Length: 366
Image (tube, rainbow, N blue to C red):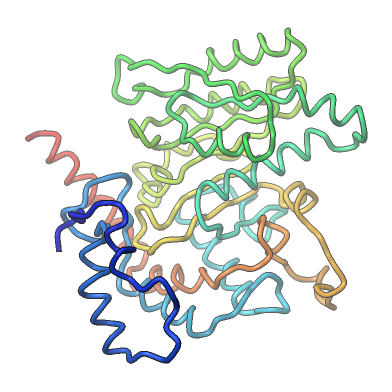
């Protein structure tokens, strides 16, 4: 099949019945239509000739685990609803945090911990929800509304659109986009300059606005820029009110499984939340975005609801991941991380990253 389907909008829809079949159909008929109708009308992301976007990077163990996940069909919104799913998620989040050399504050045994979201957009949205709730904590009524109207999020002009969409969804009125430039050294190219961020925050405070969230990136979508995390977190900590720092490492953060790239995460200890997508570069099939928080309490305070039908005897003694995300239901995503990490091992993940970078350098030299 061609990597990109040679079809026009409506091509598949015009070949399918407009009504659901009244009677059961055979698997032979269904799979024939998959081969003849579906496959030719897909853009094949798994093809070695696919070079658009950030390529999804699945593997056999991940596919097998996804099959098993669908077969088990558990919904792990709380520990009691799926004990093994909840605890395995804690384990694989801790495994990857240690491979990335994240500070201990992001491990489950600490006040923080990790959770698997569907995408970096969901991770960023949860971070923004927690950050906004923390900024408005203790305020009610008109005072809360007044401060909410002054909140500002800071990003670069290379930051993924997830920041803008998060502000749209949450009705955060001010998104400050700080321009970047091409630096003298490759490492400076299109990175977010700390001095520019400091000036933007000072200007906004002078206008009566309230800086409350900064979103640096390791590996931006358009230019794979790496923002200087340690210097940016220092700017955030200099502000009179707490500024939540959410690190979007959805793409580039995965490279930190290799010790030679862990300096990209220098300053992680000053972040409030960190996101890395395992489905971009760590051989896990879509979807699996890991979100770590340094302190889980702001996230839980912002998202926890306990209706009568969800109450159980283990609510205080175990993690309930429903309180770490927007939806209630959740898939057993941890299984495919567990399969993949065990099948390849840390050495295999590092080899994959290094091979990818070697290929990029080879392409650059052509």
